[in-house]
Image (cartoon, rainbow over all chains, first blue to last red; front, side, top):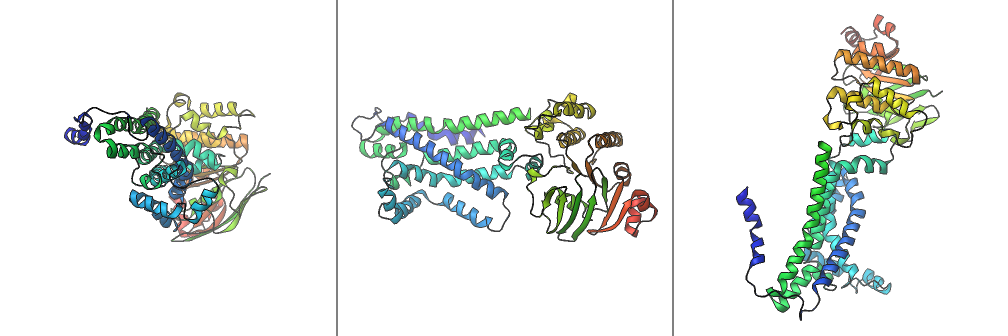
Length: 248
Length: 233
């Protein structure tokens, strides 16, 4: 176990690699602060959309028993399995300014390329499948009997979800949120095609690497890790602690 | 006075259940028969857990089926074979689960009575995960009765309980029935329990009613050899 963990964490020694003096901004286009702000704000919005749209879908897939369920599950899996770069290209071809929906949105003042909307929408596309798959597993683990008993005790469906389903699936929801967060925040392949600007952290790291080399990458890399990792970690710890409290 | 009038048709893989029953307010009816006869299916369809393929279920002015009335609008309590306690809640929260928004009309006094009678006091603040099977059964019973439902459905309510506990719970249920006047339907395969709990019985074989009446009638002249064997077991 120790050997495995050490191997797993070994790449982190790269943070101490002798790459020269770290450069903070300087002559590089874009700024660290701006990239962090873009990534955090737009990932937060994308996550909100994931939860609002993905939770009912996850619930439907977990509870529905019809034959059509296989088709819906396959559609969700396609979004999970799609290579990010391919997804970015397809999104550009489907929603770019030269397409009918893209042109219409542009007329409405909403550009679908190189805009905050393009950035957040791309993040939703790359992360929502992961959220749904994990949330569906969490919901499927909640016994349907308990939900039916709660309904017979007079609770409406949303009350059953709030008082029975969600509390029992909380740990799984935490995992789903963490997965979606990491997936959206770290997205590079699709975002670089659809929203080179405004640059989030992954794209800014790429720009820094191209323009100024590793010394300009390292500071943003550290900030990237510090912003990407704590949230899922905190969510996971909180959910586990509450789970342990409930079992105590 | 709500009368339960039901005709349930439900096709299963091995048999089709087709049962009619009618109960006046406050009646206590036993559904009796061998395992797999369709007793639990009838109860499950009455509760709304399963949807009948045809027939109708009317309780007083309320049509349970058709169309299928949502579970939260059915004024009934259903004790299933498994306790199905909410594991993330305490015993107290389980018992009072259905009472939110219905705290008036002496609800707290009634809950206190359930708590005392079912000896839930020492467990009251325990997590539902940490209590024994017998205790969980008592909690499930208290939770079911806390809302003082007009219709009570019991599906093998005393599974895995010892005889003294069963007798104690039977006495409690009968006393509460006398006080609250609910209509009761119980399913079990043990005649002695059903005889004590219910005044009338419907015997079911292969999804059909084969005999109906008071216990002495059934015991004196069972309609089929299978029923005779069950009644003498």
